Image (cartoon, rainbow over all chains, first blue to last red; front, side, top):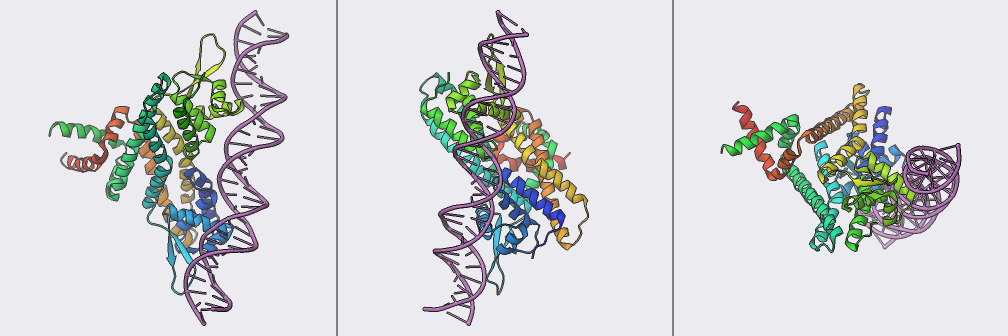
Length: 182
Length: 182
DNA sequence: TATAATTTTCAGAAATTACTGAAACTTCAG
DNA sequence: CTGAAGTTTCAGTAATTTCTGAAAATTATA
């Protein structure tokens, strides 16, 4: 059974509040927080108990967390219940969230923009509009490519990149030098 | 007056749908799309007309867009009405959106985590939880620093970085070499 | 196969969020 | 100061989203 200390309860509730800003709803956020801070896998009933929400809601929430590939189902010898655990490292989690959000927030717009930009502008107004739309399109495409790139990077390189911090600018300068002299 | 062709209407409506995923509501998304594709600044009434929404709603929406610093008020000689225009380049816009979302989505969590991590864990459960929380904290802090860094970068360098694409890995290797040899 | 344990579904209730429109407010010209 | 032109506010309503809980479905066991 999962009984939470006030400290942990605070965190779980906060994650619930933030959840809605991150693209899922309050209870899904709470469920995920709970699974992250719990060492042992939890059953759906334990989750419902710990958070005081209905069994049905837990079922739907777990489905959503699985669709984000943020939790993993787990089976325990001689127990018919399903148990759940947060998946992977925090890095993996951040990756999943970014990827999923990109899919939901950018891909549909990108695809609509591609369609729109195939048509020739019908008048001055559309001409101006298409120019702006082209810019948005290019930006989204860049961000998409870039984020795919980051995902492909090994965790160590990502770490290096992250720690680089204010060094980014310098490294970029360096790159120019390097390319010039080679 | 702003009368939209079907193509533009499609785009505006789509941006409305996406708006909710981007952190503002449908009408705010529509309003922003409208301002982006419109060359001339628009008055609040023109916006309300073009989108078929109430004057009051437009007023609240403009307030929100201004709080995101995505639109700019404009005065026209000899006209008492306020006119509005999307602010800056698409790059500026993306910057603002990232910054604003960071403030709303990460800063509060970061600050809560800092507090929680000040307290010593009371038992085994809290010990495990705090380890996870520390990881989340470090991750968020890294992302925050990194995004501040990107904002500080000049547009040209940003451009370079973006276009780098799959070259990121190589540049990182290079950096190691460079540092070793200096 | 029957039944017990568990999970999923989904109609309706509850909660939240967005929108309207009329009233209050502000600003400015005369 | 007055009133016309415009903007903002906000109480109430509408729309949307989330949550519950009981019924249906699934799965394992005997």
